[in-house]
Image 1: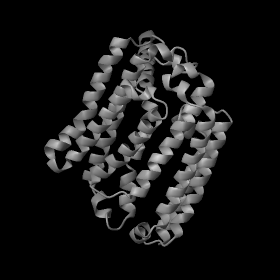
Image 2: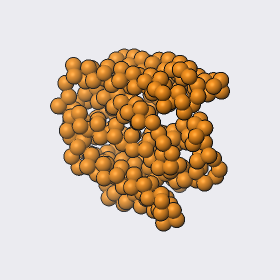
Image 3: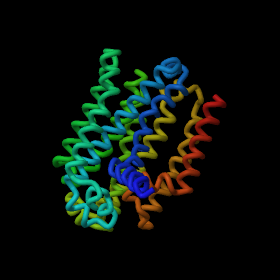
Length: 309
């Protein structure tokens, strides 16, 4: 019984170290499937079992590759993490997983993450962009871990760029088009979340991250508000451009889905300035009932608009 409890505890520690809960970020990858299914001109590319298998493969690639870099970062930052009220509880910083074991696991995760894209490349040479996206994401993460994360404002731009790559990854799997407006929207939304996170970290424990000393609170507040407004403005523009209206054949009705988008941004701003733990966006998004209601409202409004076209 004691051995079973130790095994369960070990599994929990590894799940925390690999940030399994942050795999939710990779749900942006199947977004391309949703838009392809909703687009009559591209619906055929998203049908059948093959696109589903390819999408699952790309999702798995990003999950394991991102976990590899989470482990690598935890090893590099274990000393500074011990100064943070929350990060000091991470398995590597807390000494629950040794640094060398974490590095071995990081290599294993990276190899596992690369397997789906490599297999797809050799079976379908025309799918080489899948492997290219995973490689580009890996290079970006190496650059971030080895220096860019110490440069104020540049670090959040790199984080936002990672989300854009996730969105592009979904399009390479299905070989479909994704509106540039949506890519810009994904970038500005990711930048908004990253800036909110930096603001929270600067208030809680500035010593926990090297770049935080270069951030200034008035500048952060201005950028947080600006990125939120840009996100909403770009999304509204996306719903009203002739390309979108023609693609979904729903007139200007899609603009109504901007209402829950605005509500979601306002709610997140409220949480940020009420000093909620926006240092972990995935936790806030998964636990806040208001945000869940807003996401449900968005899904319902989008479904109704597409059903009524």
